[in-house]
Image (tube, rainbow, N blue to C red; front, side, top):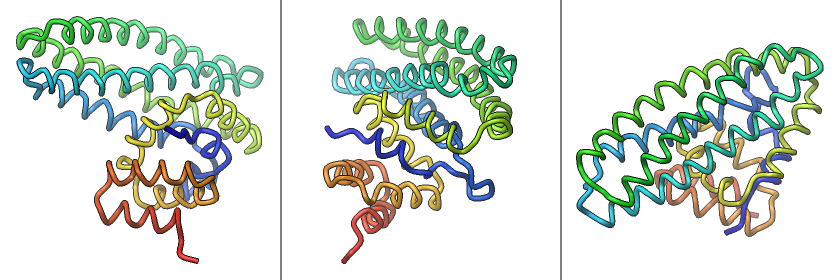
Length: 236
C-alpha cells in the first residue's frame, strides 16, 4: 500500500485557522484519542470464544501499538528537539511522562499478546479495565503537549523550523503507520480541517490520492467521503 508521509509533510494542513500556524500535536492527537477509545470499547465487547473477533482485535491492536510507538518516537526525536537550545526544561517533565507511558504500554502489550494467545472472558474483562486505565493516564499527557508544549514552540520557533521538523518526522514514518494515522484522523477531524487536508493532498501523485480516497470510503460516511474525493479529484 502506498504511504503518504512525505506529501503530508509538505502541506500546512495542520494549521489552526485562528492561529495560521502549524500545530504538530492536535490533529494527530484527535486521531489517537479516537483510536484509544475505540480499542477500549472493542476489548469490552469482544466475544473471546469467537476466533474471528479475537483475530480482528489483534489486528487492530498491532496497528494501534505501532502508531503509538511511532508517535512517541517522533516527539522525542524531532518535536521536542525544537526546544533544546531555547527552553530545554520545558520538555523535561513531558519526556519523563513518555518513559512512564512506555512502561505502561509495554505492560499492556504483554497482556494483550497473552490474551490473544489464550483467549478467555475473565482475562478479557481484566484487559478491558486495564486498557481504560491506560487511556486515563494517557489523556492528560496529550492535553499538556497541546496546551503547554506547542504554544512554547510557537513562541520561540519560526514557521520554517516547525515545517522542517514536520517534514523530517513524516519522512521517517512507515507507510503502515501513515495509513493507520489517516484511518483515525479522517473521522476524528472537524470538516474544515479535513477539507484542508484533502486540499493539501490534491496535488499528490495519483497512487497516493487513491490511497486516501480508499481510506476515506472505509472510515467516513458516504457524503463525507464523496466530499473528500471531490476535493482530491476536482472535475476539470
